[in-house]
Image 1 (cartoon, rainbow, N blue to C red):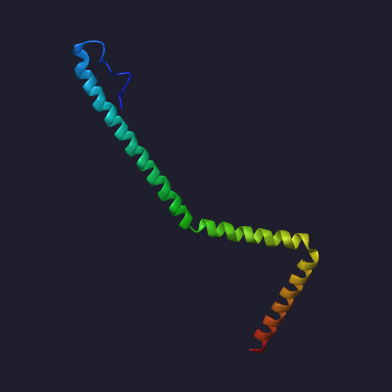
Image 2 (image 1 turned 30 degrees about the vertical axis):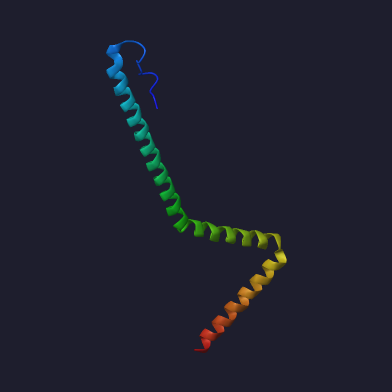
Amino acid sequence: MRCPMLSFSGMNSQYARREIFCRNTCHELKRFWEREIGKQTYYRESEEYRLGRSALRKLREEWRQRLEAKLRLRNNPDETEKRANMGRELLTSLTQEDSKH
């Protein structure tokens, strides 16, 4: 790859040294940016992997399920009453067992 802005090949013989320098510099710049892009890609992929393993995704799923359950209960008042009665019955049975002991 040639560095067009710094190339002086057709102008004068005194610039031949600069053209050689430019070629090396352009190659070094290209190699530098390729490394930087590689590092950034590695960091991004590592972060995506880390986030995929985190508990945050699981927590979000649990909260989504809770919200869906609340919406279902809000939209079905009969279902809400049934669940409330079941809760009361369970509480009553548990308190009766505790009082027996």
